[in-house]
Length: 183
Ligand code: ATP
Ligand code: MG
Image (cartoon, rainbow, N blue to C red; front, side, top):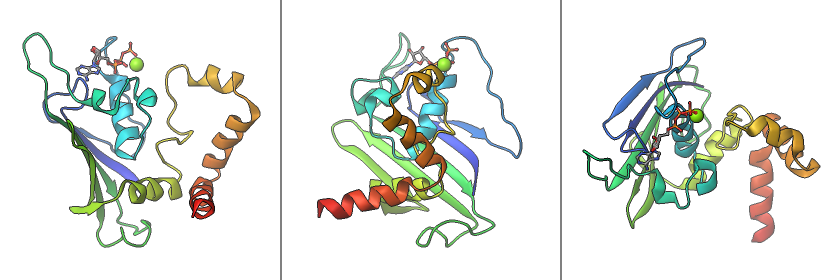
């Protein structure tokens, strides 16, 4: 499965709906400091189920909602839609009924997050598992934040191992085992 498009609405600095087509090959995003490059990567992480505000450089989950600027009032919700190419039908069971897979996450002030996959309501866990199994999850080592390389070098063995497990595509299994142990 390949990302083919991401659309941000009211997410951080992307107040107006902004669509980015992700074509085959390398996509580069360039721009001056503070123009929103990192916000874009955070949107990708967020739509895949990231739930740690610190990973989004915020204090609370609602900090991803456009907070207003001198000329624009704040928004009440933020939404990110990620479109995946599923023409090879590689999506896991339950998500594999069309040539494209559309994952939407929306957060509304005081009402929390809601997810949809191909227009149907979904649970956060389903979306997280979908991407964890595809090894592209919110914690995937394939998404490298600014400063993360030095963090990794200084990391304790346990957290370094978690990165390797995610890369090996087995973190979904660990998550399921953890949940089974809690039951
Ligand atoms: P650099 O090149 O310095 O890494 P960047 O292109 O990665 O910059 P970002 O960090 O993505 O830039 O964007 C930061 C901008 O996003 C800041 O101007 C900040 O005010 C704005 N921003 C972040 N959160 C919000 C929010 N909730 N509402 C409005 N603007 C926000
Ligand atoms: Mg940046």
